[in-house]
Image 1 (tube, helix red, strand yellow):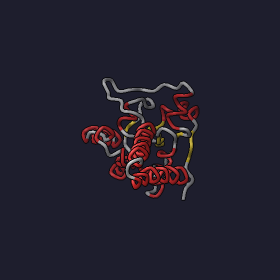
Image 2 (cartoon, one colour; image 1 turned 90 degrees about the vertical axis):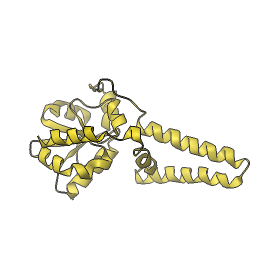
Image 3 (tube, one colour; image 1 turned 180 degrees about the vertical axis):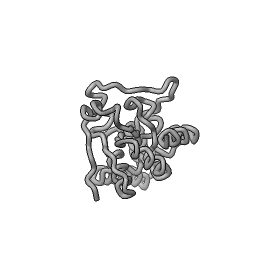
Image 4 (cartoon, one colour; image 1 turned 90 degrees about the horizontal axis):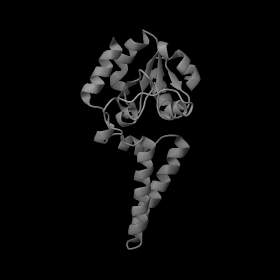
Length: 188
């Protein structure tokens, strides 16, 4: 397997004019601020976007972006399996914004919470519910233990099942027309 190319935020910023930037976060995360000129293709829609991405790579290098770099690295691995080379942004949009680089927000866009914040809310709510319900029904504590185990598994494997579930909620999904327009733009 080809090693993943990683660009720092400063390297990506210097080359932004020659890169096709693909943001693999949910539409809500994308709307909260993305790299200038970035196209939004959520990680769950990557397989459907393969023909468009193949066409885009013919015109220049692809740079995949997410909040931390984990999802964009996953996208690069999946594309490498299909024979498409792409780069990932080290540290993601978090590092990009910490360095003071410009981000764009669509005018009038909704801005749901970032995925990590949604996961913390859901996990914390489930643990608290399990503990409170466990005061009257001891079996409810299994809910808290299950969430705790899931969080440990998530940290060890650098995956997040809860984020995958939350990404399917309507406010985290792209409108079909938005995704179609993005794919058409990438085909050129």
